[in-house]
Structures are given as C-alpha cells and as structure tokens.
Length: 560
Image (cartoon, rainbow, N blue to C red; front, side, top):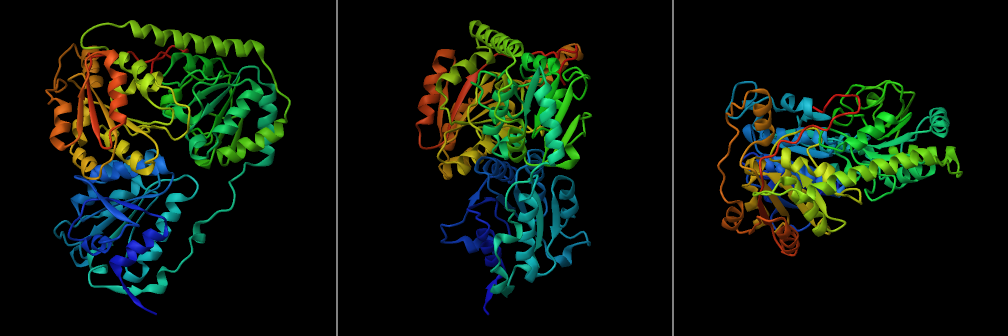
C-alpha cells in the first residue's frame, strides 16, 4: 500500500477514464492538480484565455469525439464563468465534467473571499452537482460523475473540490485501481416489444409517412437504420432542427429541415404527413413551434426517445417507445420485414418538395449588391468544404442561414447552439471539435457580434496550433435585434449598430492567418487556402444587413 498526492490522484482518475485533454485556466486552488501534468504527454492542459472558452471547447470536443470532456478552473468567479458553456452542454446533451477547485472549507458559509455556493449554482444545468467532503472519496466522486455524464441521455456534471482536500494531502493508491465496469452497459436499450409491434403496424398502413430524425439518431449512430426505414416505407427524410447531419442530405427522400431558419418545404411535408416517426427526437420548439401549425392535429406520432420524460411531453403520441434510437430502429426493421411498401404518389410529392427547395435556393445565386447578401456566401462554401468537414455555427442571423443552405452527408459534422442560443460559442466550439477530431477539417461560421465575444481565444488557437478556419460574416450590427427594432419598434435603433476592427488583421495580430473577401467568387479559393494552413485562420466577409423573414408554417404561423 502506497500513498499518492491528492492532485496526482485526480489526474490518474481522469486518465483512467480515457481523458487526454483538460480545458481550463490555472488558479491557486488548482495548482495541486495542474502541476501534476508537468512532463506528461498522455494527458495535458489546454489552457484558454477565459473560462467560458474552456467550457465551450470542452463541449465541442465531447460532441465531435463522442468521448467525455473535462474543464477545470479555480475558485469563485472562475468556476462561475463556466456556467454559460455548461448550460450549452446541458441543452446539447454533451458529457462534460466541470471541476471547480474551491476555496478552503473553512471559508465556506462565512462569506469568505471567492466563496460561493457553487454546487447549487450548477445544479439546474447539470445531471449531477456535488462537493467532495474527504480526500479519500475524491476518486469515487470522479467515477460517479462520469457514470452520470455517460449513462443514457448524456450531459454535463459538476464536482466541487475544496482546496484543503488537495494541498499537502495524500490518499491510498489502491483507491485508484477501479475498473470502468461500474458504468459499462452491455448492448443498447431496446424498446418494448408490444410498442414496437404497434408502431410497425401503424407505419405499414401509413400513406404519407415522414421520418423526423432527431439528435438521438446522431448520438445513437442510427443514421444507417434511419435511412433503411425511410427507403423501406418511402418515408420523407426530415432532420429535426439543429440535427442536419442525422441523415445524408443528398438522399432522394431528403427534403430539408423544419424551423424558422429552415425549409418551409420540410414543414409542409410534416404538415401533410399522416404518420410521423420521431426517431430520437424531442419534437423540439424550433422543429414544431409547439402547436399545430407544423404538425397537423390529425397526424399520428410514433415517438422514440431514450429519455422516458420526453415521450409525449410536447404532443400526444399514438405510440411511445423508450429506447436507444439505433436499437429501436433495428427492432422496427425486423418487425416490418423486407417487403418494400412503395407509395408512388407520396414519393412524387416528396420529390416535388425537394425540387421546390432546390429551385428556391438556386434563385439566391442571382442576388446582387455590395456588400454581398449573406445568402451568396453559402453556395460558394459548398464548393470548397470537404465531405467530412465539421461545421460549427454561432447564434445569429447570418450564421443561421446555414441551416437551410449547407449540405451534410456524415453524422458528427454539424455543431450548433442546440437551443441554447448564446453568442460567442461558435468559434470556441469549433476549436473543440478540431481537438476532438484532428483527422477532419473544421470550420466555424459566426457574425461580427458573436466573434468578438470570444475572439481572445485566437491566442489559444495559435499557441496550441489548432487549424480551425473561422468565417466572420460582418454586417456591422446585431442582426436579429436590429430586425426586431425595425419591425416592431419603429426603427428606433439602440445598441444594435457595431463598429468593428478588421477581423483579418486582428487574426494576424494574434499570429493567425487573415483573409479578406469581398466578392462571392473569391470565397471558395479563400476557404481552400485556409484549410491547407497548419494553424488557425480567419476569413472576414463583409455582408449586407439582412432581415430574413421566419419561414412560414403551413398552418399559417411563422417561426419564433
């Protein structure tokens, strides 16, 4: 039996979970941990310039690599700065472990310097939020945190470790020799057999079926099964809002995504459907508007989700199935058999809707003006982006045009704000995706407002040589808010017009490469050149102010 330093024990416990990177900012309460990384190559600190950037990067890493991520910060405001990124992980179902190095326990409950109730601050935005009470139980707490983060519906967790449990403390090294079997689950969670049988029967009888592919299809590696179901039953393929990469967008049954920044043709297909298979979908607000303007009240819904609380939460369902999207899809394929149910009339409608969308987008290529309209950026991007390129978009009007205008063929290539909506996440999440999947090219798209929220992380990208290509669509305003002030407040513009630096030059000051593009025909060449650079780059594209109308739902109501 040997003794091991508490800080080293934390590092070894993380390494036992397969952790390779810790995203964070150093501080006095965590020096007992980070100094144990000195000289190691198997696990290292990827230090950022702000704690929010660390949490955003951890989210991108977790989503891209499909592995748990860790962010580590010091006490008080440093840990609180993680909250925005951890809230994104909560909305986006990403397994992120946040570790807060807290003040000495003697300072707690006495209004000590940097002493806050961190556990309760993080409880609403995590699956588990707990504090360590003894040094000996810290490894157990870390194991438990990973179990919560990785089981079933994945998500973030928070553990608080007071400084006095780490500094000059040791523990028995036998406490580290635990197998990961405590959270190993053999196989996938299958759906109830009777529910699957009833769902298969309903799908067999459907004349206008739609497969709404949600985040569970991506998380559960169920793309192949989703496509097989669609082809077997002539189902329209419609990814849920924010999950464009759930199914290949080039498929003949693909129409587009619903939502106020999506395709009205996709909402029309959902409205016409007599049966919707919501596979791994929460039937979220952006996809459905939570009313019957998109989903017809006569439509029968089969909802599959790994979280029982989501089934039937927003719409009454004809059949509800709790289970893993891939496992349930395989059960449905088995129950349906190999006989193809062709529906020529519905397939013709699907093809007509898809053709209508393509024609609408093709018309945008004739948009003229200087600076260019933001819609002109996307057809040029499509020419340059590799098939396996990971694309992260920030919140905002111009980046939001991505939803209906870029194509995705592989799961795990599209990352967004996941219903969180916080500006500034795009750049940092993009950096995290590239760290998580260094074998794939990575691009982030953001507006000028969002980019300046976290642009200090250009320094992080340069120091750690992270080759992310960042497109800044600069319309010199907060576009969504200016549109509201124009439409609803008599063009009384307050706080929405921005004065910006040249973003390409800002990148060069930090040591990155900068590109400045003013014409559509320059975009593809700039992106291709930037992707070839072994380091970060920024492409600034001045665009016109643009106030796109929300896509109107078939039932007569626009988006939110």
